Image 1 (spheres, rainbow, N blue to C red):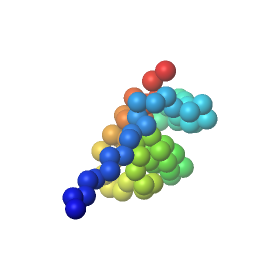
Image 2 (image 1 turned 90 degrees about the vertical axis):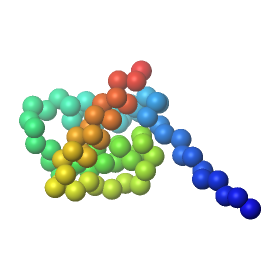
Image 3 (image 1 turned 120 degrees about the vertical axis):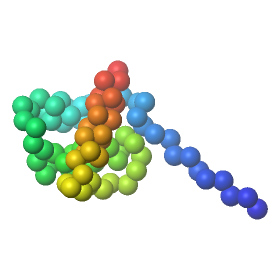
Image 4 (image 1 turned 30 degrees about the vertical axis):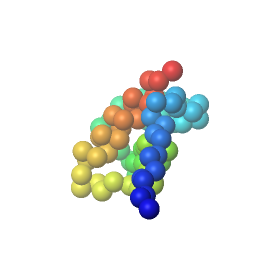
Length: 80
């Protein structure tokens, strides 16, 4: 019997929930290029939620992943 992979629907085309939106606005309003540990956890949690993957914190040795996740979440944030 042939098995088919189940496709997981992404939430990236759905608007951000109100509480998440408030947290994201607070994150975006800061005027520094440094990201705290708490902020990294927020980014990781939100990205896992809206892009349907397990929660994990990207390695700090690779800021590209974190920046991509921030960019991804900014796209979700602007969906009305």
